[in-house]
Image (cartoon, rainbow, N blue to C red; front, side, top):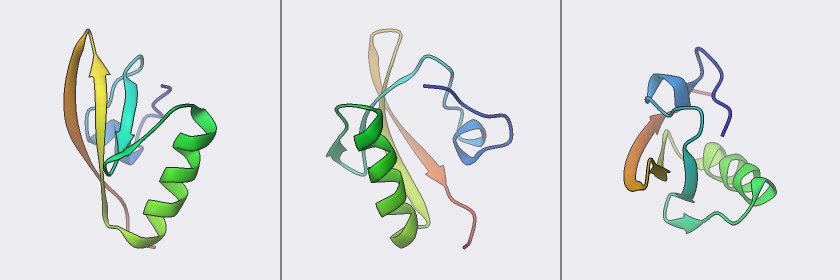
Length: 68
């Protein structure tokens, strides 16, 4: 995953190379599904919970979204 400096994911300590497995409990299979989950959740939520895989370990990361 590419993480842009200054983004909400960057602020939540999501790192380049992390693999996103789930967004808010919904499995992510590919980039298109990930982008769709972000778009859908961003419209409704103030935070997103990513389940990521980092260095062989699964971890939950909470990403705070800016207000619309």
